[in-house]
Image (tube, rainbow, N blue to C red; front, top):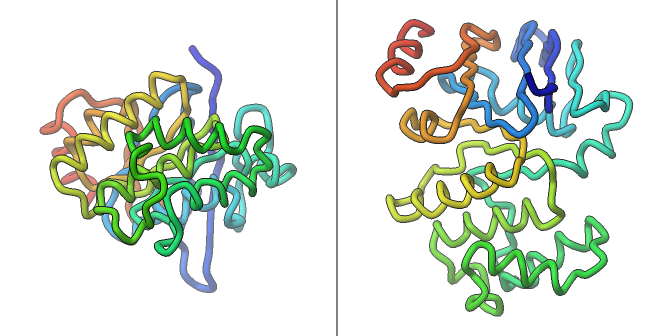
Length: 232
């Protein structure tokens, strides 16, 4: 069996009297994709922020590869790419300028080459000099993937990336995620779309009120729907 790429151990997070996460534990095998499911308010986004090193847990630990997140947060953050329904792009900058800005944050050596490759990978090379405000929702999401992967991260976190996309946009995004999976990236995907969950995931963790109520594999949508109904 593969070693854990991401390991979450007894993770808890409190905001005052509110318990957002309670004793959450699961592992994501290296090179695999785990889907995180649950109703709104279950703690999914809070969990992703902790795994990405953007928020500290109240208790518990996260290991990324062989590194303890609490001991080397900066090192871990540089290994992640985060893609959500919020693209984190600058509308008044061109596609090229957006990627160059983020590339500089990671001190990329061949910045121009990295930007060119990233644009080509998401089929936006011909729109490189266009301002992002002229892009469709699907194009912005593709550019967001280029932004999140320009530094070639080993780990990817997807937080509802399909929100607001039409069918064509979903198909393009799914194709790109599958390509990244084929490259051996380790990923956690948060989605409400059970069809996308089954299509892209290998393991499924269901959170309800900050607790893990199911952790395992699943092959069919109707099986996953039954599990979700049980979890409510």
